Length: 173
Image (tube, rainbow, N blue to C red; front, top):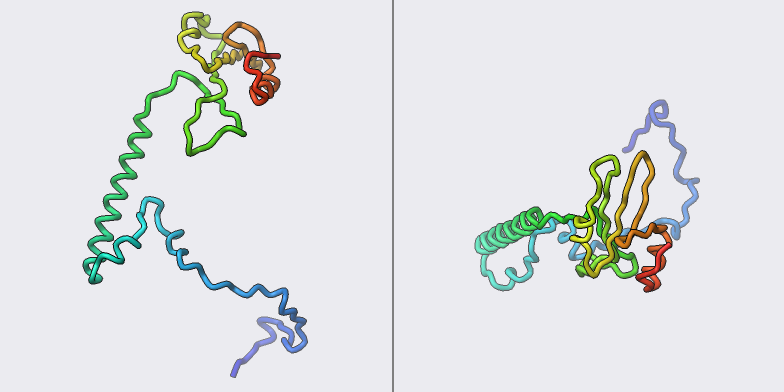
């Protein structure tokens, strides 16, 4: 028998409680692969070993070796990313309609930032980084930022991006 203390929790009688069965969400049956969502990202898919092993102990040892090799591979990838060559550019700008994480496309343009209060910017330095990808210099001083093409022409960055999007690479302002 359920006892209720009205002094602790004042509750109404549930007989008069309005209930609409359409407003209640019936929980769906969980997906079979929902366990995969809970695993660490570096874990491999174990479906391949389930069909090849004959006992639980063999499955456990195979699973352990799979996880170990996958973890080592993830560590190697992480170290390789950390040892990538340091770029001389401060920014590489990609256009949003052409950018994909899975493909390494060339950037729309590159940016080198320069503080005008430091030593003068050498032309040889800037031309060293000029290639078939446009180079934009960002010169800043006391809260003011000026964007300049490698040609020496000052540009409006919003228009420059819009022209790149349209395919007019050489136009500025």
